Image (cartoon, rainbow, N blue to C red):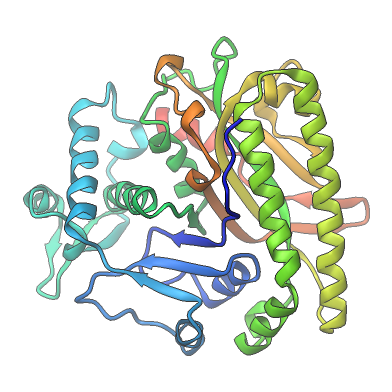
Length: 363
């Protein structure tokens, strides 16, 4: 089975230049070593003092696009509009919600196309596009940057996380997104990350101190995810799938306890935030891990408060990306306040990605 030689330490933020909020960035820095973002050289981000501090410490780094980035993203965008069998409804529907896209993120070949779609071409270099068009282009751009630099992608947006499944599998889907006759699928693992409570009111210097004390546990957390996702993407045999699941559940629970101990020593209280990982695999692997033979799209719990489920069926196995997939191609979501503690344990609060995916394709 294909394995990576190094543990993932860095992550690529998309789709926006500025971060969702400072709290979200702090949460990400509790897991990964560095967060990259795509910033045109001509633009100076409107960062908070805490983000600037993280930049000064080398924990946030800007990626300035080169000619190859722009040309490759433009090529993917053009191929999508011209060759996709049917554009998903979520990409076509008109919206009154607009987003800005900096012109320096767009290759000259397709600037006229996007300018024609733009309500306003701002003199400061911004296109005002419908959110769906702007986000679709940024998906292609972030995918290009991720591939060329071998950095997994990270978003705070459930919709963007869901739609990335579509593009990572080269639009290889039919209108029947939950087809039980199709063996290969794109899937999501949903699991808790242990993060200090009250991040929004905690100075980033304290967060970085906590992060330093948690160095070993952060590395182990990423290693657990990497090992499991690499294995499950290639599994076909049921017994092996079950063994891998049991090992994963054991390790993730032990790691969570270690996080809690460090937090206690740092006089911090721990809640749970949601981390989701997207990857391709098979129905056999999901059904076996969930110990359910009927509907792997239900997102079943697999122990230690983790969940797993299918997002959509791959239409043509001959065009599958699964065999060439590795964890550096993962798509991550970090969602704050998505998991709450209750008297009978943890309760996940998230929109099931298979439903969001079906809405994107068919609504």
